[in-house]
Length: 285
Image: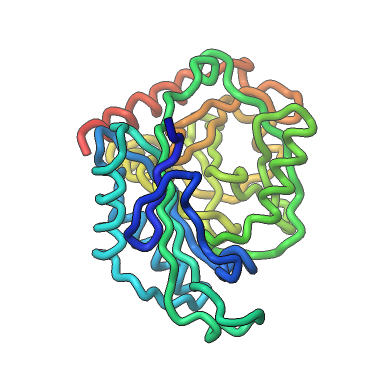
C-alpha cells in the first residue's frame, strides 16, 4: 500500500509516480513557500488561516501566485476526498515554477507549481505526555527579524535539528543574534514562569504558527495570564514548565533542556491542561 498521496497541479499520484522537473525553482533554489496542516475527521484545520499565511509568505518573497486561494482550496479538498484516511498530514507547497533555463531570474518561470503531499497522521507517542522530550539550544547566524515567511529554504533549521540529533535530543531551541530565543526547528516554543504563559514575540524572528495563534486566542478567552516577550536561556532554566506547539503535533511537553530538568522534570500540570483545552477547541471546529 502506498504511504503518500500527492497532488501536483490538480493531478493525483502515489509516491512512485509523482514527479516535478529538475528545473523547478523550489528544487533549484528553495524558491517556494509552503504550509503544513492536518485534518481532523477529514476537515483541514483552520485552512483559511493557513492559506492566508501561504499568501503572506509569498508576498514577503515577491512570489506572485498564479493560483487563487479558492483554487488551492479546491486542490486540497480533492486530495482529502481521495485519501483513504480520515486524519492526514497535508504539506501544501507553492513554487515559483519551472525555469526555462538555468539562472536566478524569477522571470524564467511564468507559472507556479502547486504540490500537495498527504499521508496518514499517527497519534502522538504516549511517552511524549508521560516523559516529555529533551531539547538543546542552537545559535543562529542569520539576523532575520520579524514574522518569518514559511519558505522552502530551511538550511539553518536543518543544521539546528542535525546538531540536536547528534546530541541525542528531540529538537533544537534556536537563539537569534541578540541572544533571544526564537522557536524550535518546526514549532513554536513556550514556557510557564511565575505562573505566566510566555512565548517569544514575532519581532524576534518567529514564525506566526497557527497553533501558536490559536493558543493565544484561547489564553485571552480563558483569561490565562499570558505575555509575548523576549526570552533568554536563563528564562528556560528558571521556568516551571516548557512545551512546543505545531499544527501536526498539537502541544508537546519539554521536560529537559541541555540536560537540565525543567521544573520537576516531568510534563507540567498546566501544559496538560492547555493541551486538553486546545484539543477540546479543535474538536468543535
